[in-house]
Length: 394
Image 1 (cartoon, one colour):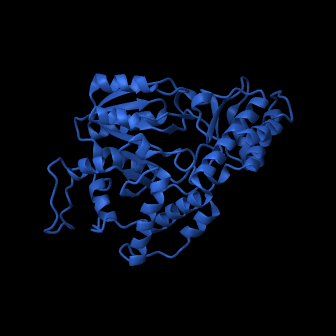
Image 2 (cartoon, rainbow, N blue to C red):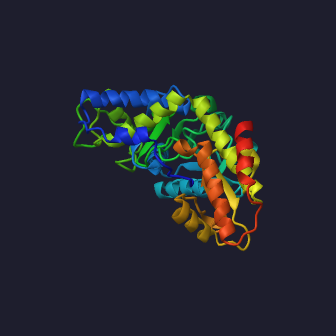
Image 3 (cartoon, rainbow, N blue to C red):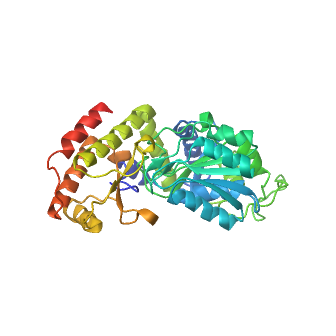
């Protein structure tokens, strides 16, 4: 019950046990086509270029940025937590000129501040995290892509922590590239990064196409732009691999493709609106239960992620002793924190297969017992009823 990874859905684990297929077996390429179709509604898009990048969620982030951003480009990063800083770290390695518009941890960046920063620095790309699990805050994105397009910039959103648990609307938000991961709200293992790419961004990426020598044919034509700096994260070649060209760029991670496919099948069979509602209920119940114990919830209620709740470690309490007791006595893992919040808050997740009422209630009961055993005085028996009421009201 931490900020991710979480327990995988049993259907996803069973799907991964299926036998391997060759990467150009018609059955395998059929599964690839299914994955593209399944993830379009998950991302809220009709983008043709909706596919997987092999690797953890960070592989998708790096592929997106390395393929969109040329060395020397000005990139505006919307920064409100650790993972905004990660975008900056990756962009520094690419050689971008980085500008930032920031908010304190526990807040989000107002859209008018993003607009002013775009006007100030004239970026080629604007990069943002949707839900930053380090702060448990979700950045509002309505109108984000339109701001970028009006300024002639491409937009990128990291939706690793929210895909499958909070609404994504790539088309309505006019976002050019959005990436995700399986290990949080989608209830899968880490190791595959869903990505969707608009036609506008695809033009930018294909202008940098340079097919590697060992697999190029006479029909391949390189783009006029500079070659993408990474071979593995070259989206132009990855997109050609997922197209009818079936460019032999890499060997597809078959078991992870099975996992990604089943994650999306589970989400769509539940219904996305029902799934988002379940995550909202779980987050509301967790927050209410924590407050009923007399604990202080971290950050702004207006922008809290549905699936991860931060809560201050009470003064005088050893936060790691509580986490250890939770893990060893109750077999429940909750998360610690990073950077300026390290040792100050716990991060408790309720997402994917674990965004269930009974799991929230069991976690709250275990936390209450662990706090009491470690000498913290709190109103006993209040958390679970408060959580049930909040679940029903959400």
